Amino acid sequence: MTGPMISAVAAGVAYDEAGQGSAVVFSHGSMMDRTMFEPQMQALCDRYRVVAFDHRARGPRSEGPYSLYDLADDCVRLLDSLQIERCVIAGMSMGGWMALRVVLGHPDRMDGLVLIASSGLSYSDADRSSWEQHYRPLLSTERVGREFALGEAQVCFSDSTRRNNPEMVRHWVERWAGYRGPTVYDEVCSWLMQDDISERLATIDIPTVAIHGLEDEAIGIEDARTTVAAIGSASLVPVPGAGHTVNLESPDQVNAALRAFLVEVYGEPARG
Image (tube, rainbow, N blue to C red; front, top):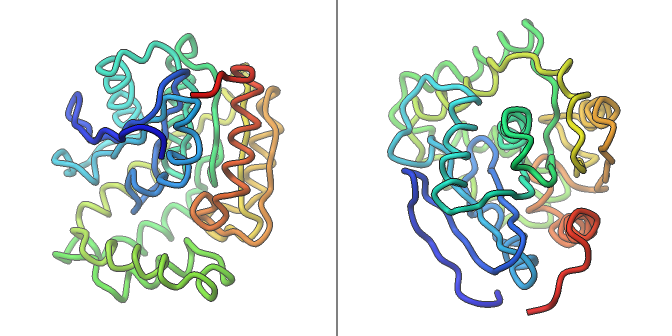
């Protein structure tokens, strides 16, 4: 990594920051934390100011209920505290749903939008009920536990990643197993119970790219295609062999897509 990385807390939000230049802000997915973007921080900090931050479930304000709009407000307060007037916001899964609400609420502060393994679609009543029942037992468990965490890994990582990179999968399973059950349930409900913003997607007119694994079982790539079709300024980058955690599973392909997108938004930056 070029230059020192700063780890700090601002506006009640823990974050990592490195580099200088135009700002790129990363928002993590459910069950994850800001460290999931280490490959992107390392790849981009030589030309951009990169920030990755933790949502409430990974911090002291973990108790719910709260909504994606509450998380969006947290994000904007962090931008204010860091004196980031404009940025490209990149959100993975839940972080993408949150990022969409930041873009819709504060379009004057957004230079671009990156949806990583995410979409602009809400859940049907049937899917919402099914997923809520799946996570409901966590309300009565002190910790998520290894068995439940292993089940999450089946959804979050592709077959090839679980086979070829078991150490990375094991790292996240061990981390998830130690989470408080009710905290994860509240986090899940923030995106599971989200409102329908599909009719508002057409109002987004900033450069947008969706980066999506072709083996994503949590959010199918067809949802990404539908989202891209609704946002006139959007394009889709499919990543073969990658599952839901596409930026960890295929970092080189994702980083290349991010660099190309940032050149589209900001032009070719000066080195150093």
